[in-house]
Structures are given as structure tokens and as C-alpha cells.
Length: 112
Length: 111
Image (tube, rainbow over all chains, first blue to last red):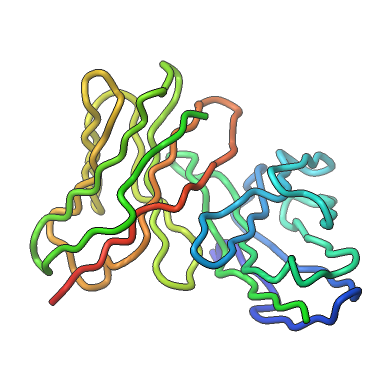
């Protein structure tokens, strides 16, 4: 299993640009989520999904959209990038023997 | 989910046991204690979790006090690769999937 994969690893955007961060998992997990991590901070939940076709907001959803058309994929869309969205973004899926969360390697986004 | 309190940082000598404390005085009866760690620049990694009883796996041991208001994560023989931020998280079981991360404890294992 590849686990949770994220693309791209790094991205630089200009203010106002849009982009999609990709996340995929091959473990057939129903639950997936997106977090952001700012320097010196813990992770904050952006959006999550409990299954295909179902999404909900987390702690910091403004400026981000998600959709879940398949079990495997959970893309995160930045509609109009702002410097405040400069962060490291982690995708996670939940499953396994202990229902623990598996995190991807992260996408490092800089908005100029 | 109950709030947790952890020290900002700790040091440990390589080969010695690392004991990381966590206070969760407002924990309720259906809430589990989870531990994750994040090695620099990587995604968080699950370590262990428990409800009431002490737990042990290949990575660590988790000691939960009888009143469940605090817990300790024990890495029995710390190595340099255990240097990471350790997060103690309390969350309800069942369909509540959300994890609320605080700032965690930066454990530095010294040679």
C-alpha cells in the first residue's frame, strides 16, 4: 500500500490564484480530512469527509472547498489564495486496527 | 473534546526512558487518550491510545491514572530518531473522528 499520498510537495502561488491540492489513499478508508499547520502550531482541521459524497467543515474552513466523489480521493481547493493561507497542508485518512489516522507527507504552500 | 496540557519541551538522554506527561482533567467517561508524534517536517504518526487501562505496543507504553485525569507516554529506550513533537489528544470514541491538536511537547533525545 502507498498509504496517503499528496501532490504537489511544494507550491508557490500569487495572491488571488486558485489551485487544488490532491490527496489520495489506497486503504479503502471512509474518513478523510485536511489539516493545516502554521509555524510553531499544532494542526488545525479544515474540512473532513465521512464517506463519498459527504463533507463537512472543520475548525478553519474559510477560503477552502472540498468534494469527495470517490472513496480514494479528497482534493482541497483554494479558491483565491491569500498570504494567510501560507502553511503546510496535511491530508489524513482514518482506519486500521485501532481506527487511527494516517497522515500524508504534506504540501508546503507559499502565497506571495 | 477535553482540553489537554503538556510541557512545551523535554530532553532525554539516548538509551534512557522518556516519560512524557499529559494532563486532561476534564476528560469524560467515553473519551480516549491518543498519542501521536510528528518528526520534523513529516506528517503526524499514530503511537498508541487507551481508555482506562494501561496499554503497551511495540513503540511505547501508555499509563493512565486511575482517575483518568492524566497520563504518561513512555518510550522505554529513546533513540535519536525519537526526537519529535508529541501530541496528547483526547477524543470521544464512536463516530467522532476529529482530532484536536494542541502544541504538543518537543522531545529532544541527546546523544
